[in-house]
Amino acid sequence: MPAIATIGFFDGVHKGHHYLFEQLRRYAAEYDERPLIFTFLQHPRTVLAKLQGNDDFCPSLLTTTDEREQLLGQFGDVHFFDFAEVQPLTAAQFLDYLADRWKVRHLLMGYNHRFGSDGRLTDEQYAAIARQVGIRILRADSYGEDGLKPSSTVIRNLLVRGDIAAANRLLGYEYMLTGRVVHGRMIGRQIGFPTANIVPAPDKLIPTSGVYKAVVSANGQQLMANGLINAQALVNIGTNPTVGNTHQTIEVHIPDFSGDLYNQSITLHFTERLREERRFDSLDDLRKQIQCDLAALHPNQ
Image (cartoon, rainbow, N blue to C red; front, top):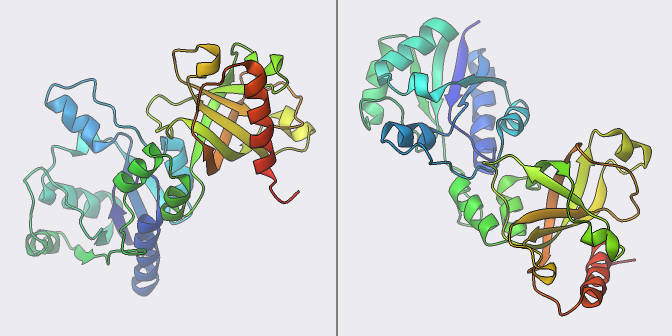
């Protein structure tokens, strides 16, 4: 069956991407073609940096590969390319590959998307090259909200500033962070608020330090046994200055949960930043502040 495709890294799979995929679906129905979403295993900038001799470059990403696959799968068939393999291809070579291997007959390009190793081509040049292999180029409309175009860069900057609410509006969902639960110093347990310490993927963007409201989801048996598949939680991101830590940790306190989460993978869905992280004069002062933070989880109770 002939196909219509769109291509991009789609970090965050945000509202701007959603708008692109809605156009993809509409065109797919109009032309009776299957919708394909092509994306990449690596961020293009990582590959390009290595070509320039910078092997250590690693951008902080809004979504892991698994998260992107799950989010993109709502909109069409998802296929991952190794960007290092397709990067050397010219626009003509890449279009020929799409036509021959994937039966692409229409290519929907994002409003500012470019491809091909032969430089920045004009829309007219793309169209002329594509016609030679039986592909018609379509240029997608751009999406804007409150005068702001959603972009992965804008959302990253919002998260770095701790503006979870604005980031979530542009994402179209609550920013998520998945990590494996590891052993910590158990300071929280000592003051009556046990926490799960999580370690996320190394290239995942971590919001700025502070205390957050989040919903915790997991497939772990202990969470299921306690009926807390989607549990409200407090999340502290930072160095815990009250107890003299020197490295960043991500600690999750789930009220009324007593199960064993060690080595399980849990996902945090951030809903609000309550306050910045700060140093308290004593553990008792810290305990009192956590009690106030917990009250903010259910402000109407």
